[in-house]
Length: 173
Image 1 (cartoon, rainbow, N blue to C red):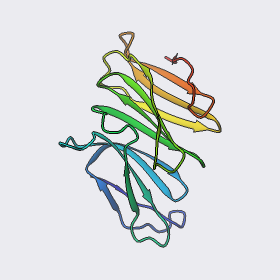
Image 2: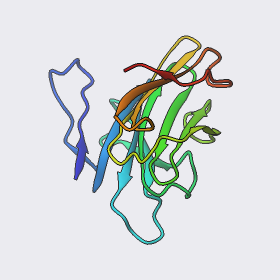
Image 3: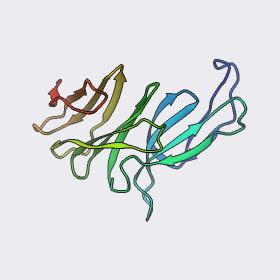
């Protein structure tokens, strides 16, 4: 089980733990009073394997207000993901280990609607890998590992226009 706790006084006191769910590989981002999480669900019939949850917190709330989202719809089978946010948008990257695709999704309305899709493919037979996303100003950078050349290496894909267009993969190691 994964739990979250929050503080409104710089960590001097904490709210009671709030149970997210029985999940694996959570990633977290903050945007104002909203906490965004992406994670793997335990495999269940009829439940997307990759899911997200937005929790709205505030001093007047006893428990967070939860909202479920899945930026990629129900088609992700075996994936790892990361999330980041800035003042205007929430960004999610997904590395689908089933069909070796790299996805990028962006929401400008706090996770209600999402745009994006596949931005890269062909990672070799990657069963270990990881993926991270970071943004600053208009730049979005995605870092991941894969074994397309037989050994695991780090690669980066970057955008200088909030994720509208992407530069070619850059091998870092």
